[in-house]
Length: 207
Image 1 (spheres, rainbow, N blue to C red):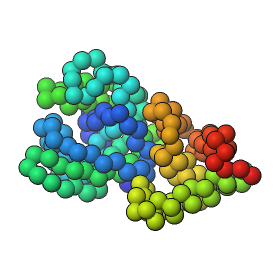
Image 2: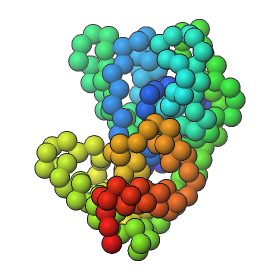
Image 3: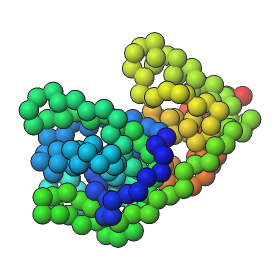
């Protein structure tokens, strides 16, 4: 996971109909001037931007927009210019943050807000009771890798409760609201326990 860095204040925000988890992957197709400028600035200064899930409204309009209070830093890992005026960004999720001040929309349409970082999940071994869920994720990784459609980056930290929980949250067919609540949970073990209970309820794992 990216090391702690000094954040710009206010932090530029990218509202999306998606939840980015720490350690996760996010692909973005950027073509609006405000986000092209943002990507250029982040690359030049080697700084992240904030990804927040939209609760109401659309970022493309200036109508009423409501964002979740907890978001995740996005670090640009790769960039590709497929054609003039369009960038494809490959980002990785860093630390989580909570929005401290009401987001403000700048004249160019870019949203910004002052934020406070949330402490990263401490490294924690999965509890013995959830080991079937860890094994199931290892099997899912092997299957996805064989299909050349793996949505995770290496190394695969199957000995870390937070990493296992986050990766499951990314691929489970649950609502954005549910993903958001799981991402915002402070306890990695609690997050993994909820995932384990869900998988057992769906009879994906047993034992």
